[in-house]
Length: 226
Image (tube, rainbow, N blue to C red):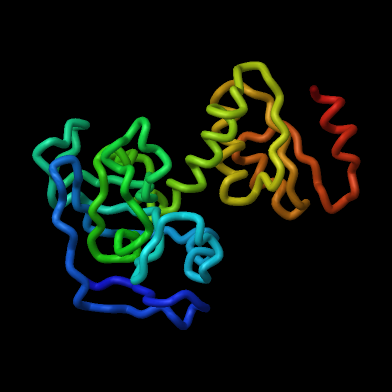
């Protein structure tokens, strides 16, 4: 298959497009996705530059963890209803730090398993069917940003209906999802953004906007609403 690969750490010029990269055959719990779109986030270039050596990794490496596409192969032990032909999206980050809940991923590391490739092999628990209301192009950009927003608000923040939440950088990738998620869960949402992004953030569901370019005292805003 064709894939974007780097064999040494460095600037963008270490990236190469190779056409002879083998497709990884799926294990019993895995699926193979034919890529439609792959998303790149800041962590990808930080890894490429060698800034995160504390994570298990091995060169050569294919960058990217966000993907959307169509399933073309399914392992014999896949049990979450995924089938060949399903349009899906996935956050295919190596889950070496989730061995308690997913022991099959304990030995995963960053290597030739990134998403900037024609085909991606992933553990089925990392894959979900694409909502009909979202295009494959959009779905490929959701996983990291969407999960970050959800985990921050719901898993760690324990957001509940009726609370008020202040979302900084509400027009950014994570912030945009956070506004929508918080509003969908019955919160009053205050979005901090520049004036030029105010209408966009309101369209996502924000109840109030704080324009950080105007020098507003954020502590007073926080105290007033909470």
